[in-house]
Structure formats: structure tokens, C-alpha cells
Amino acid sequence: MRRLSYVTLVLLVVSSIAYAGGSKEGTASKGPFIGVSVPSADHGWTGAVIKDAQAALKSYNVQGTVLTAADVNKQSNDIEDLIAQKVSAIVILPLEGSPLTPAATDVLAAKIPLVNFDRELDNQQYSVLLKGNNRGIGVNAAKWLIEKLGGKGNVFMLSGPPVSVTTERDNGFKDTIKGTDIKVVGLQDGGYQREKGYTVMQNALTAYPEIDAVFSIDDEMSLGALQAIKEAGRTDIKYLSGAGGEKHFFEAIKNEKNIELATFLYSPTMIKDAVKVAIDIASGKAPSEKVIVEPAARVDRANVDQYYDPNSNY
Image 1: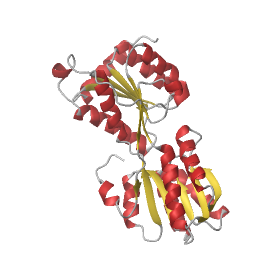
Image 2: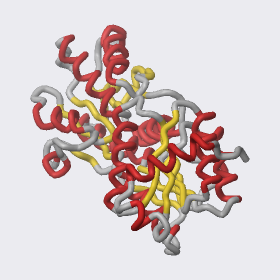
Image 3: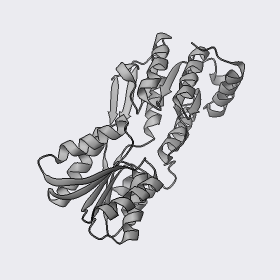
Image 4: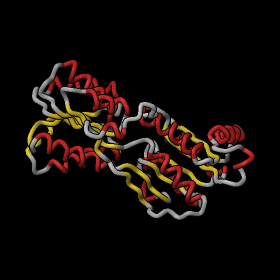
């Protein structure tokens, strides 16, 4: 296990003061200290996770720190530092599950509760897993498009890189459309980015002259795809799905007149629930479940106002 450097200790203490809900004197020795380790903000969703984690520590009035990492080595080192600091509990959103599993094993060996958020670690190396329903996103989007298309039509899949989140969403969709006359005309990686989603959709519009609907596994990619479709003047595409719950896509759902849009929730605010679970375990409250899956509810024109918040971090 790597020893905690003096500089890292200072940074962790400073961060804990910055994100604590109460005063340093009032909570440092009495309440739990929660360490949160997440990827750096390379996507709007991840950026919101960071802000929501900080907000959760403040709202629950506990000491804690939120550490970000751009690569698995940095994240692994962050986890080892938190172990050395003897924090009360750790919440981790792994950059990748397998490379971070050894660090997770060290956490459990140190008898520190570990809440695995979103991407899964290998071999159930966690105290609790809390995640959104990735497969449910694909299943529910497929059911929506089956209904809208009457069980037949051409669908283009705007997918992502080969990680578990992508695989579960894609497979949920493909498995659900089996036995229908819906045909997947193409599948390409949009990188979970609006700009790449725009470029990939431009290429798809050139390659496939007849598309009835687009199944996208991310709201930001969906926004890029929507822009490409509108610029190309393609009137054959009647439906476009997303995933996440991004406020600008909510606005598009409200305002778009020519293409019917829907998204399926996978909100970054789930990190707040993960932090609460960590606090509860650190305070001696046993979790009711080892695996907590939050539903992939559909948001469309009929109910978007219930979910839209212009002040949302995402």
C-alpha cells in the first residue's frame, strides 16, 4: 500500500474543509469523513457528478473530499491515499472497473466500507453497488420505438466506446427488438460527446438514405445528432431517443416540433444517493441491499416539465 505523502495529506485536509457541511471543529472528530473518487470532468455528466458529490457532502453536513483522476493510475493512487488517511467510507466511480479492482480490494481489506457507483468493479469488490439501469435504458427505448414505429422500420444506433455501460444499453435495445420488423441499419461510436455525435450522425445520414428513428445511448450525442439531422433537412427521421437527463435535451424535448424526442433517466444526481449510503454505513446503519438499481424512467413531451430544472448541474 502506498504511503500518504505530506503534500497529498495537506490537499485532502484542505479539500475536506472546503466541502464539509459543518465547521472544521464541529465535525472533524465526531462525524464520518467520506472520500469520493471520480473521473475528471471530460463529459457534462461527469462534471455534474463532481458538483453533485460536493453538494451532497455539504447538504448532509459531513466532512469529506472529492478527488478526480484523468487515468486509472491516478485514481488508484487516490484510493490508496484515502485508505492511508483512514477515512470512514469511500465512494468510487471507477474510470474502468478491472484496473481499479485491486485498489477496491485494498479498501475492503482495510475494513473501510466501499460504495461502488455506476461502472462496476470486478468480482463484487464493494460493500454496496449503486447504479442506474443501463440495460433498462436500452429496453425502455426499444419499447418506445416499437410502439411509435408500429413494430417495423429502420433504426440507426448511435452507440459508445466498448465499456460495460455501452454494452448493457446496446444489448438491452437489440434483445428487445428481436421478433419485430425493426432493422438496425448501422451502429457507430459517438464517444458520449456532442461534437462526435454530430459528426457520426452526418456520416450516417450520407450512408443510410432511409432512417425512421435513431436510438442514441447518451443525451449529449443525441443533441449532436439532432443538429445534424436538422441541418441535412432529413424529414424521414421521426424519432430520436437519448439517455441521461441532460437539461438541454429536456429543452429540445419541449421545443422540437418535427422529431419526437424522449430520454431515459440516468441522472448524475445518483451520486448523492451513493454518498448517503456511504454515510449510513459509516454511521453503523447496515445497507438494506447490496445492489441498488435506480430506474430508467422515460421522459417525453408529456412529462418533461416534471423533470426539467434550468439550474441543474447537468
